[in-house]
Image (cartoon, rainbow, N blue to C red; front, top):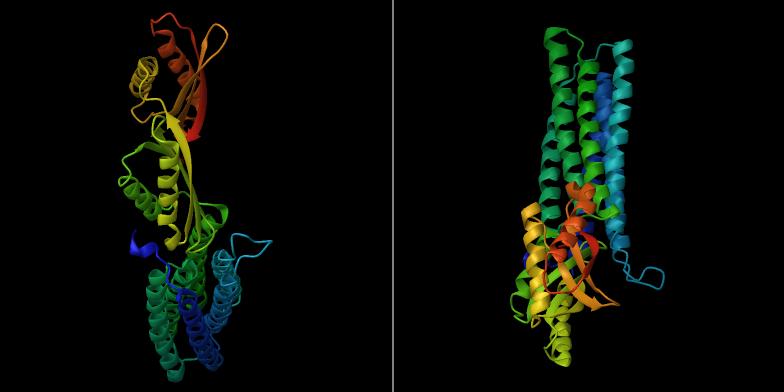
Length: 379
């Protein structure tokens, strides 16, 4: 199992420490910028100060998110509370959007009614110190966020990076006004706010995905597939579904195709062993046992013909769970076919192909296809 998906016991402690660091740094920087803004009467500097105070609030949200995520599972929330961290990430991203909107509004107002700003060496020093402080906080948050796989801290890192850009832009505006007597403070504020809004939209997209439910985690998927190779009795697998209930908390299910002639009790024990392999990584895995017919000439012929017509139509097409049930005067053939998003309008054509393959089998038996379509994302 990849070490990157293994969650240590001190993960929440590390996350809370990072949140606390964010609060302290942002409050100090916001206070300094507010002083600088009042000294220069600069709307962009004051807005930047408000932005840092908002960042401090975001760090509080991150801290609370880690704290709530620690709550154990209970009767009302049997999957635990780890998704609180995702919720806190989403709140941070919304905060970024709000700040961008407010900055844009203030900048437009100052473009309409421009005011000259006062140059102050103290303000310049404060802003330079702010750039260094925010750059350090961004690097720290990104490093810790990657270390413990936290979207909340990675969102905070992006927010801090945005602040570096904002403050540098504010500095440039102040210097231009000081040495060239051109009022660009409001225009620079507008450009910065657009940059923040763009980052905020991207953050919302990233943070809302795990809340809605994302595709299978690739690291976990590959770890499960690699482990299957250690179980030669597994002929095939399908319907792998991984549900993310917060960092370090996953529930997964998969279907194993195993020869029907293998001893059932032996198969059951090996499946139990496979499931236990993943508990230590925070993954509750459930394996469904699909007995497969391997010693029937009729079934093997059906599989061969169905495979031939499907791959000739689209090389991506496969099938699983093929089984036959004799009925009155004909035999029903059940099978599942995983399809991709771009195949949604071809389902009836695929069913017709399968039926044509069955009709072409010359053994005196009439077959009727019963096709179920799966998402290729789980296969």
